[in-house]
Length: 432
Image (cartoon, rainbow, N blue to C red):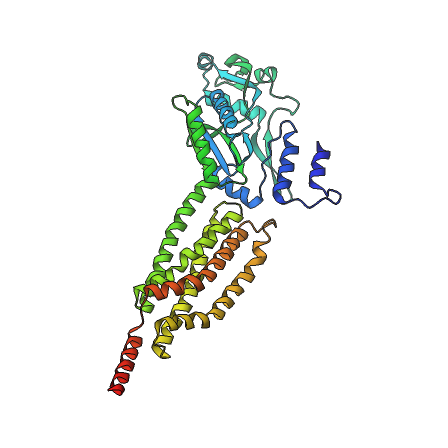
């Protein structure tokens, strides 16, 4: 097994270099063949974030709450079997909760009352025998060590040793533990997880090739359709998708505020609703390229992609401002009275500046867009791809669609109209 794992990690004798997804797939396949191993692949920062969000080191945690541990384990196995067929689910595992041998001590209240003992005193004596009790301190130079009293390490917790532990009574007698309690061997869980003062068991998984929201929706659907939860048992979902959903809502709100802010500022600057709307046309033009970028990047809309959409909206609005403001400048200050001619001339004169700014931004994003497989680019690459494709579509369509819409729906400035009317009057007067 270790040889196969080493072969997965090491060089492959001149074969093409594998991508990150291919390497992880090979690791999952090799580790799945080793009994008793539950592998979860990720990065240290991602694991810390997952642990803070859900208490596990996985993207999605399905928490099953209830009272009876065997019932919880049975429900966890059913959930695990159902989620195994959901596309995009990887590193699926349930908590490895197993029965381990235990020595149980059940105090007999009648025997304790006969010797004038309390349960707390007897339990303290039992804990001191095997876990130890600090009775003093030892000084060695500047170092201080606790002096702990306990049974010899050779006396492990067994039925015989636990039964022979002596307990001091108020009358001065020493009574063995087997006289005060029922001691027997039993089996119990190796650990019990709790949350909100309730027992729980967790089924965890990561997501590959899909968005976490879609995987969670599919998991909820199959669990509700195939598992009849007993009374008092319920399922909760936790993990990164909760944070992602809250962040998406926050970014959606900020995106709307950004669009409204851009429109308000444009209306204040140009004092024309038509000009502001013509510039805002660049936003859906940029959206076309951004959606194409998401499609070519794998079809998953992430937080980084949404940030890319918001960023490209600002760049697209800037290109529209450059075009519309120059057309108005030609009409108001350079005496171009023919409206269609001012739009054509303004588009030609602003072609080079718009292309220059777009190329400068695009060339800076190309290295990030091409390094999607490199470590540390998981956030930068989707954002760069969205901005790059959105910038491409907005720049091209801005020079084709906006001038046509400008001629069709806009109108000359008041200065241009007045200049044209005065020119007509002068020509008419000369003719007369």
